[in-house]
Length: 65
Figure 1: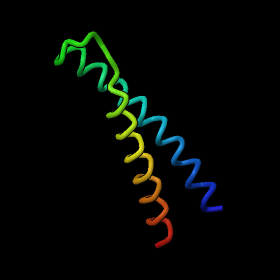
Figure 2: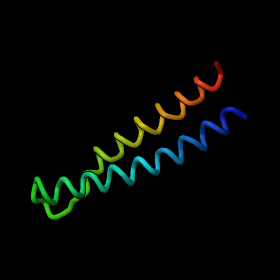
Figure 3: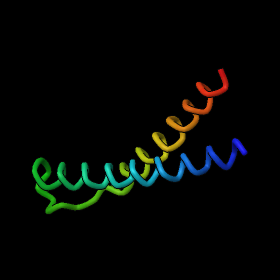
C-alpha cells in the first residue's frame, strides 16, 4: 500500500514540477537568453525527477515517525 501511495505522489509531483520547469525555462529563454521561448527539456526533466523523488520520499519518511 505504501508503494502505491508513493508512486501516486511521485507522478503528481513529477507532472507539476515538469510543468513548472517548462514554464521557467520558457520565461528564462524568452527574456534573458533571447531564444524565442524554447523549452530546455534537459533542465525541466532533471528538476522534475529530483523534486518528484525527494518530496514524496520525505513525506513518506515523516509519516513513519
